[in-house]
Length: 310
Image 1 (cartoon, rainbow, N blue to C red):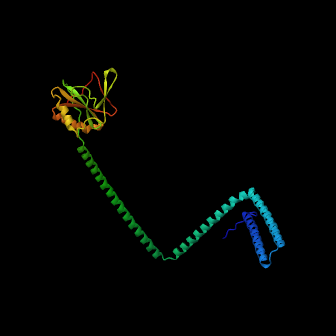
Image 2: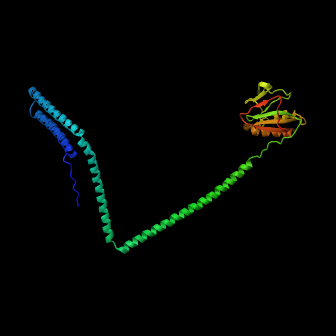
């Protein structure tokens, strides 16, 4: 059963036909004028009077065509601005979309009908064999996929165990590489302290052998109340790994019976402190040490607390 579509009496098709016919007529007139003028030039020689007459005819024809084109433009502009055309344009677009959808549905129905006819003509036993074969293949693919999933799960378990073992090994290696440190136990002593600062990867001796301030390696800033702030000079100091003799000489001049070494250790100079501590121990000196944060400064006051010896 076919569908009949009733078109509106005044549709966009009429407008398009009018536009095409008008412009086609203009083009045909222009072509004919060009052909006639070229033929006249070939058949007879041009005279001044013929040329003026031909130019006048061409001018009149061009003016007439221009007037027709302007009238057609005005007519088309009027129709475009007409509300009826504006309301019909969406309807025409909707109609075209519906026609396309109907065509697609018809094609789909035709293919389905062909498939049904082919299926109806097939032998049921052959169709059953085909379905059984497809089912068997699907089950085989399912078993293969399940095997892949099981293998992946086993691999994940193995990797998890391996990761745990590596974590334990890493922890053990870290624990082996780390040295257990402890702060010295405090106890009373009558010994005098000799302060040494570990900073910038070097060792700075606060007092010279005559107990005066070490101004060669340190900058001393006087503060209120008679306190002195000690600031190590980064370009100075003693590298205990490169020049252990300087520290050995200083520690050799200290009495193990009356002096102990008090280390002030910053976080960037712990290896230097370890080397300096070994040199002090080798000279028979006891020591104490106190960790300092980078922002903390060393201030010597008239009355202060010395780190206890170890």
